[in-house]
Image 1 (tube, rainbow, N blue to C red):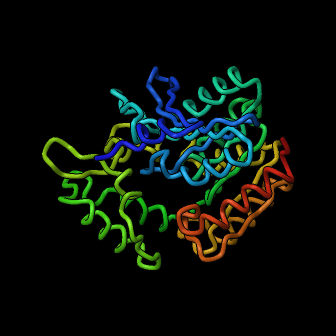
Image 2 (image 1 turned 120 degrees about the vertical axis):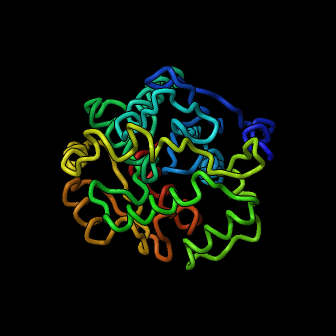
Length: 300
């Protein structure tokens, strides 16, 4: 398989980097260098940092440094020997990255997090008493989530977890069956970056199965509590944007409205024609929402 991180590192202004997480774990990252204030991108569960490539490039072109990170157990970041994958473990890593970026850049970063990455950034900001980020963008995630949507997503992630796929095309078929309303891409290169080729010749998702099936899986620990996540949202003081996919299976319109009631200063960008994977479904509209927020609410 091609390694996009290696390809990206050859492009002008784009390089590979790494951070150290809360358990001494290595976190792989891609840095899209520019002079402006850094923007940190944290992907959703089961994805990799490559999910942000198009958006990170656009942010770089606009004059800000973009840093896209593989969360623990995902992509090229370390799998945890102790299998620690609760929400708060991811939040602890996000905090370490934010502190490291501030030390090197001299600025508090802006955080953009989708789903798991969004919850991790929200909780990290809460537990650091609002000291980590200058602004926060939550991509189709709020403290309240539709239970049936969560179960459907986790069910898809767990399906074929051990068996894997004989080919990338077979994995593409599985994604198309899961997302029948999304047009199938002409190229499978993007999907290939979310898969790893194992020694037995089969392709499996590029994340540690313990994320779902280990002794400390993602939906465990204190942050699994909706009340805890609501407290974290209520405490927000920095400029905040919720990007909501109008067709989302995870966040309803009522839940988006409830978030705005918890965070009265927050802005909402409703993206029509997009489901939970907002950036993948409507990337142009997603980027427009991000740039409007950065230019109007955050500044240089």
